[in-house]
Length: 170
Image (cartoon, rainbow, N blue to C red; front, side):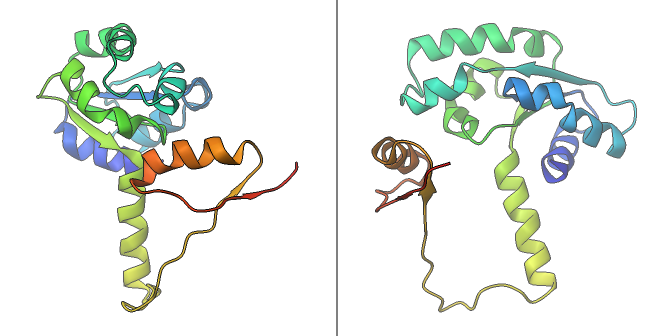
């Protein structure tokens, strides 16, 4: 949460910050607290966008229905003239081009996952905990639901075909 909040404040250059996320993320108020802890008094406008998750999982990144939903969800944020918009869900970065069109070119989109990964990379580098350059990275996927569906949706996130995923009962 904190890396995304820092990135949103920096990108917004003192202007208000928008935050979109799942209903649970928005209800938690975590981004608003983090932003206000770093920049007291900075206006934060939040909006739950629960339909984005199933639309992404369906692969409807640029579908007219998705753009219509986005225009509805983001209308208040556009009217508030937010300067940066935190994409507070792992699914939302796949909608970046469409979200940018809806919000306009003057709004900076903040991928909270990307900001977190960059902050982690800095910490690992500072503490000399990074993997050696010649390390062969491997992924291991463990799922509690439909393995085939996970591989299909997961390949959209990673940008390559996923191998086997281990199914585990809950």
